[in-house]
Image 1 (cartoon, rainbow, N blue to C red):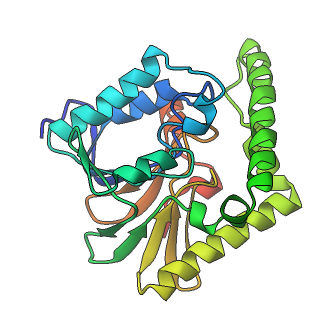
Image 2 (image 1 turned 90 degrees about the vertical axis):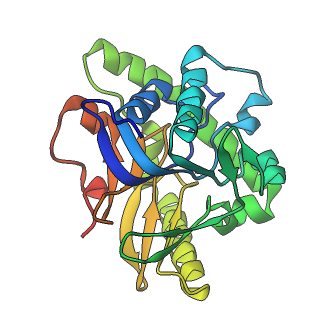
Length: 265
């Protein structure tokens, strides 16, 4: 594999919740990450193309096409690319077992770290009771989140005029509203429990748009975040250590990450 000058080389990268096909996808920042990072294996952990959002209207600018081009190019030039569909692209689950343009499609996958740990890789919607059991709650939650993203566009327009960086209203509310915090904590415990129940050393997922690497109930819980609110990826370095990559922090050249994005011990 050819590594371009200035590129970062890692063992594995996990990205999810790109939501390509919507105006909320930060495709330019995602493309910058893909151009400047080379990996042996790239996991696409669901909600890559937002088929739910595209039902309301097609939005597919050149920047979104460029992201797909970069992913396929990696698959063709030596990177193993593994796609685990999520709930927003659940139609792709019918393709599990297929190889599409060099991209493997699986319902879930087992990742073996450099140190031999077995990590279960799945999108995570199976742990979301509202999505799994209540279509009404699913639609309501989606509508509220869409409204927050819509309002966030205007907030960030104003911040741009003031020379301030992007800020996520939806992520801010998730971290401060008690019910939202409790839901996230329940989700994380359910994911960790599933890893324990099935005999894995840890789990990698997405879905809830909250990047985190932590030990929960004796197993490693890793959530790679998203490319709507946070612009994060989960990275396994050449030594087998996991950490969270924040593209916005990287682009600003800031050395110290936010507390929830610091490298896991």
